[in-house]
Amino acid sequence: MSHGIGAKLGAATEAAEQGGNTEMSDDAIVGEGAYGAIDRVLRFFEFIALLVAAAFLLAAMLLISADALFRYLFNNPLVFQLTVTEDYLLVGIVMMALAWGFRTGGYIRISGLANMLPPVPRNLLLRAGVLASAGYAAVLCWQSWGHFWDAFVTSEVKYGVIDYPIWLSHVWVPTGLGLLALRLLLTAVGPVQNLSVEHDPSEEI
Image 1 (cartoon, rainbow, N blue to C red):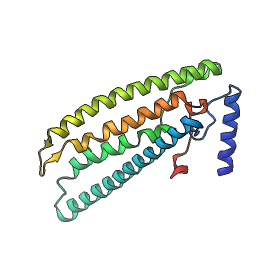
Image 2: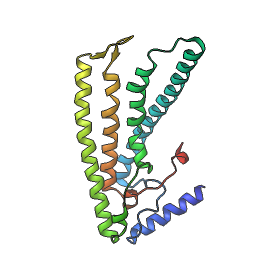
Image 3: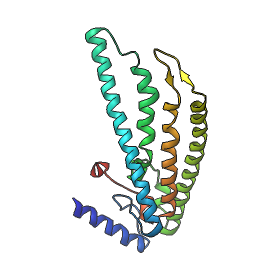
Image 4: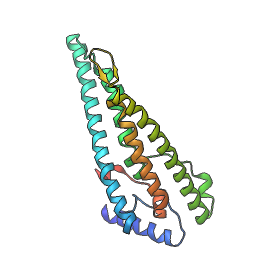
């Protein structure tokens, strides 16, 4: 398996040097120099965020299963399950895995037009699209940070069986979007083969 991946990465590098297809890479390439150093640091934080998302996913599965058992076996459901799952765990699951998902190719791209272009304009078009996406994610990060900070400093809560702190739900949005914006920006200025990644994420876990 590792030999096959190495062969594909070598082919992608050779193709990039010759202006060839940018869709041969199995995973994002770690560059050299300052780019490589920044990329490795960002990968570390992406992996930590992924672990948080995975922990939230496991917690959601256990909580929903426990709620079903208590509901149907003891007629005593966990009244906090829906709020905790929907407003906290699912938010973290989605947002904290965004950057890692993008880097490993877990996204949909409509590339029919780009694939019809010669290599140079195709790569410029892809870079422009990724850069625009980075700007959009950065704006969303900034806006969501404002909502999080307001909820935090005012100790805003959602009333229910218990008082749920709103900031604990909001904090995952700017965190995930911030990581995604940084990954998109780094991709826009990085090696050409990183512009279109096809990868099986299970190889990295």
